[in-house]
Image (cartoon, rainbow, N blue to C red; front, side, top):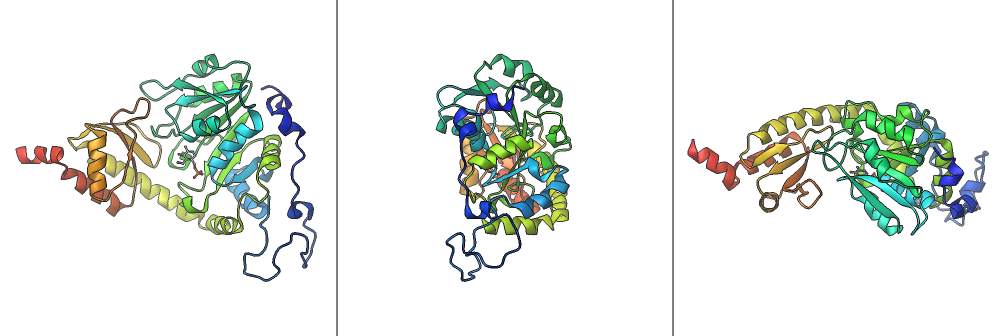
Length: 354
Ligand code: PMP
């Protein structure tokens, strides 16, 4: 890896960050706060939240086996995705490399930040080669984006290729693990200490069941986390979100139960899906969704909408022609989906012929 100060944008390196009232207060015992122009009457949301979410990070660190200084918390992992561009990529000059297809926000953030986004096509098994990513890069490539399990394909990327990229790429490698709780593969968090160029993204939006509170996590070296803290909005994670996440940490065991039942449901739903005449293929998945190639994605999507069931039509995504992405729901939801599909004309034909 190049030295961090060669990767970081010069203006960010030189930036003197905004210092909020609660940054300057050093946490010494105090009971009267006349420093932040807040309303003193307890609404109870009258006080600014902790800008560095210290209490929450203290709870996350032992669960994830990292130090609190290796954690950045943001308004969804989408905030962290935007911050990596703003921290490392010079608009109009630098570029990034990403697998294709993958989560759409990497490209959107690249374009918002005026950064050239280079795509490396996955193979027929939705896998990539580190050598292809490196071949697509040049001296201005600052970041590489990997997503494992990948969205929308659902599969884990090959660990050996990710490790090779971490070893050989001179810039930052982002491994988005939004769906890793549903996978049996070990997380790349274990690699953080060995690879200073690694950023791992996780989120409270999936297995943790908290998409509404908007809380994402970036794990990286303390040096990289300090850069994020320097450029983030002062109070980027609001008080209600911090409180709710602290509360959720106490429900850790329930998260494990949800994961187990969603994995059982995934198995069951896929088995049922395979029997449908409209289903051409189901791609292997390590996530809380699966990608399926169907006879006509648009028609089936519209049919399901007419039944009040919304899945994701991915037919316009690279390598995903006529594919639907289906999130695993509760057992009754999955049953309703299957029952609706059994009544889809093409599937009924099957029945009528028996
Ligand atoms: N990464 C991936 C791979 C995702 O699929 C998503 C959400 N669909 C995100 C990140 C964003 O998650 P968050 O809700 O934490 O912003």
